[in-house]
Length: 200
Image (tube, rainbow, N blue to C red):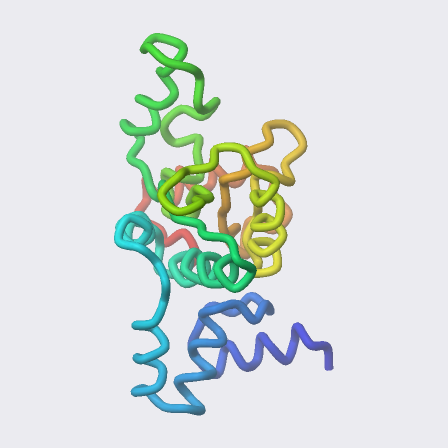
């Protein structure tokens, strides 16, 4: 029996997302089962996410939230302070960002219109790296955090071939494993319009 199969069986028994990767949600569930709810609650309260990060994380789908918090924790263990600075956006908010550098003042910040960004569906978030209160827009630490995010099972925008987006992370649903980004977004729009769950 492969390790992935074993993890999937454990995840199914624990009632968490079955993806074959032992991420934070799986470990928290294992901890709760073995140590008990009191220990699990204490562990959850100790999560180092700052208030702004928690506000952004709260906009994400439940399947994505533990991974965002897990990335903050994992980066902190490696001496890197990160914050989640963007979570889910409405189509209108995405269109406003798309207008920058086109029909609105400012530089271009995205090539995605409303409905064409994973941020519109609760599966994507952006991080910032900080040294104290200073935001680092450009730092080699983004690559280090990118490796940590991929280890958690997240897709990292820094590994994309066309548009490199180092602060960006997203959780690809299992049904989209073989789809191109454009195809996945089309299915996400359909599911949203029909009220179908993203991870269902």
